Image 1 (tube, rainbow, N blue to C red):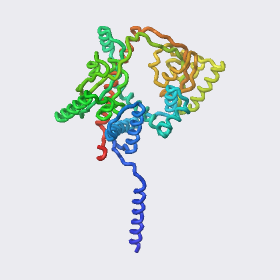
Image 2: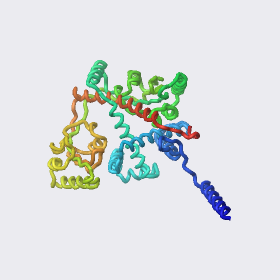
Image 3: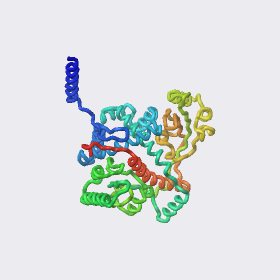
Image 4: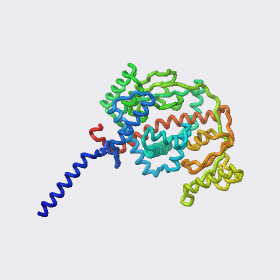
Length: 430
């Protein structure tokens, strides 16, 4: 009787669980990535966002299945980077996130409340948007930290490129490049190479017959920019991967180039647009700042409030900027100079600092803001337009070489990260 009773209870429980399962849709696993998973709901959310953005831009899209495959690939890469971020101890704090959101709102000429309202209207949840942005910032930091250490630009390389640019009369023209990659595995055999080459040739046929490049990129590309329609942004010809630069030189808008073979696979490139001429001037900003670094002793809130009180006192004429900086700033490079940074190209600063500085008028002081270094206030002292001197040109050439290497090494790093990982795509998603 006791066994029968236990069996009856177990049967009843199973029936109840089955009934509940029928009513509740379980979030399925789309892929296993090392010790983590990518969920079907995450894939669908990304597909929905891509569709929304494409609709706003008037961009046509491939099939839902093609979008789903690309979204899954992006999420797998994100998962690998987030796992690495955890091992590296990379964290984006709430103050850093808040400052980034504030900068985004300013760029769109919106108050924080207006920006929040727009996010809710377009995406449904402001909290989900915040966490997705935190993830984007985290993966960006992981990529920078791992790629930067791979790059060295020698003085000889800078001299060689400067000489080449002078001989060619090179300009500062920029190209908005589209890129499709038909990838190859790390050590491909002849059959795999032929299969990839045939696919690349078919893609070229579609493009030559008038198919939309961005739509084909979303459907077929294995590059990290696939979901952006292959858009690599604006690049000077000397910032592009060497493989592209050699072919793009002298080409016109909408020209198709490829397939080009590299270790990563077969590349197809187009020029969406061209802009710029020989720009020989640039703007420098003169500024000074104070940096307070949060610690065990000084909390985030205390650091921010300390700077906020200083700004209030400074505006009221009760505090001297240089004296406060000498007494409190934790930036060793500017502290003894009263926080003075002198005239500098704003692009040398971290994005949050650069973006805050760009919003200020002459002699205006900012509110406290957070960067990866800590809490700052900055005052803009002046602007000047200067000639592109030999030293400045040298800096620009160094940056071009660095950017080219960065683009190439980013691809290599993500490929290696993926090769070393355990990844299993669930059958119905393959």
